[in-house]
Image 1 (cartoon, rainbow, N blue to C red):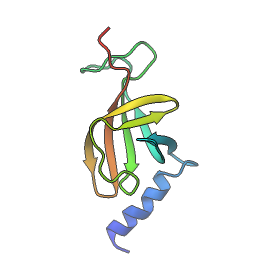
Image 2: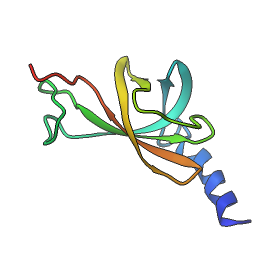
Image 3: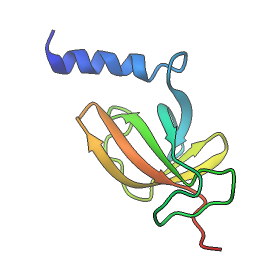
Image 4: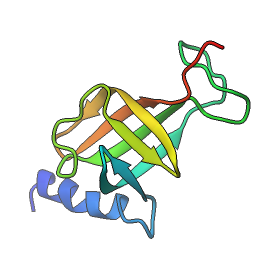
Length: 105
């Protein structure tokens, strides 16, 4: 088995909802994703109220989201997140940096 084939088969393990992933809505489509929430009120240009993360990293399969774009929306546990940028991609998985609850007030 080639390395690329092995990585592709591993994606199904990582994105298994019985293991590490959860179901989210990406631009209205239901997909599996791994969500890594950032720190509350972390340094940078995002703001949130106490107890809410304003940043998250979301891992998705490239087969589920072929061309992620800035401004795409991801609904996670009822909260809406916006894709700020695709930070990494190996053609099998994408790492997306997302923001929510941005407001300076």
